Image (cartoon, rainbow, N blue to C red; front, side):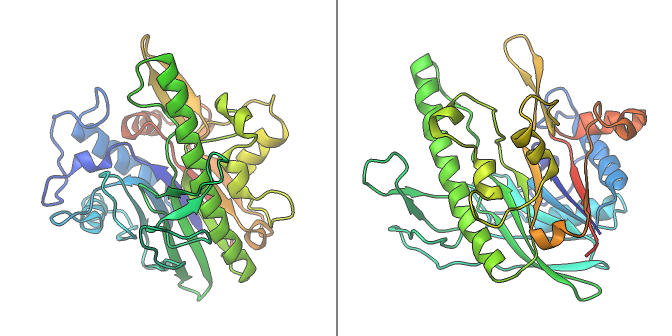
Length: 341
């Protein structure tokens, strides 16, 4: 089975208010990319990775009028993709949902959230992801209230052969100091955002521990907006959110070879899953932000990971059509894992 995670930049901008795909020459949410080119680039990428299930980060919006499921299933039908079924969890207010697009002939996936519901006061022990988590963020003996702007998607998955496992799709808070205008504001927002992100990942790790203690096979995947050594504030807090999620100390570890590489060999060449233009001169910054982490039982089955990077992966670079499609489709690139489930 092949499972993928893919952050599609402003996928929502390709659909009208009736969830119909827009394939015209108007600009998409991507800089200098038309809606037609992004849509067809995405179709080429989805066909090339040929995954049985794709965790889509920044999926189209769900609200009183719009439906993520309807938009994604319509997209799959338009381009003849075998991943013709979609499921989401708790919708959010950002127009960037988390959704699984999958092949219903290979598996079924059901939203299956764990944890207790919370009121405004929250809870300290792995509450449901649409609730409130209480944690002391700044060591001032006062519990802070933390929420997910994009609640993780918890799924119970059953394969056509009857195998069962769980998936958690994640879009962790960005650390970028958006809106900051002075150096002091950049520092303040950078520290504040990292605190919130670490709190989200502590909350997520609590749920992971519950799943592993129950003996469940688990895949945690998505955009974590973090990686060891990505910014100077990591030194202030002593660890990255990736290290928290993967497991520290005596905790049962999750496995992702790309994360392990930079954790164990910090001076090695770093793999990348994203590529952004940085002002003011518009040069490109590459970063490892997207991960597929598997539980020990699944790791023992010798899974194979792959980043579909248009320049770093020879299979992608040597196919000009696929290479161009990856660059048109998003500022992130898919990550896949092939695993015997």
